[in-house]
Length: 362
Image (cartoon, rainbow, N blue to C red; front, side):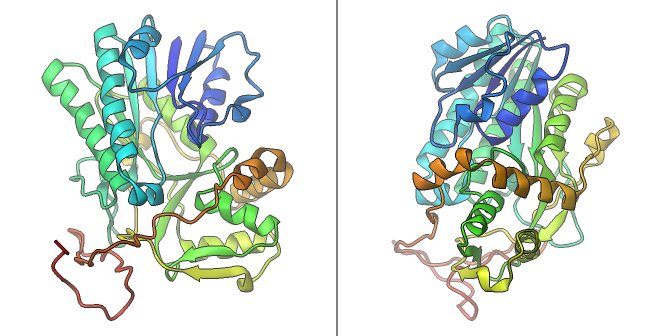
């Protein structure tokens, strides 16, 4: 198999590149990455001498470059994306440019080159928030609540349109939160672990009640490979390990793993429009034969150990501002309130007791 991976220097992308190179059927792997702030070739230092591996620095919005790199490929996995919700709140434009326009350039280059299999990596955030005990299925409508999630939903719908309009199926996976090695330390787990290693407090949003489903990145890579090679072309697959935790519960598990206590928590203002709970039904991908292979506690412990042993990887990133707080929404606006279609409220960042609805400033 000749395989193109976009965004292969990012967190999940680099782990997937490593996973794919462990497969005998991969004869060539090209990694296309723009090396923006979260792209890091140090994450792939252990595979750079593999004769099957080639790195190309470039932007997925560059149509001429995409036409060149997809030529002759048997499969394309599209990871490249802006992915931090807080950054999307500060400025949505780069998310629209990369996640929607960039995806469109990739899809169209693949269509013209008649690439046999194309997998677009999306997120469970496109569905919005959902109340317990329900979980979203792949047929549920998309109701994203952040600019990031909206940009990914736009790309999902664009992928769908290629099957309808051109008869060219693009497969989509919607993945839950991942964790593991090489995770850029602006995200919750690597930020909290590295802060605690340095004796610094961890910034917990709001009351820490938001629920996320945590999947170890190696398990997610196995899921993506299975969908790429055995999934139904044009189908959508939810991916999640079923490890639902509140952010507060996760924080206490990390504190325990690093022999710290609740005094290391700093409660900070919540993110505007912060979805309360994500949960996806994974019946479809489990029917393909996938199941997570890593126990949550063991995987968290392994992740803590990795960051403890790889300071040379994360310290330069934090020194360059990776842990800076973003997405506070500090601008002239008024909360419109709102609830999702199954009753789960969206957090009002102005705090409890605020009026439910006001007109926006004009």
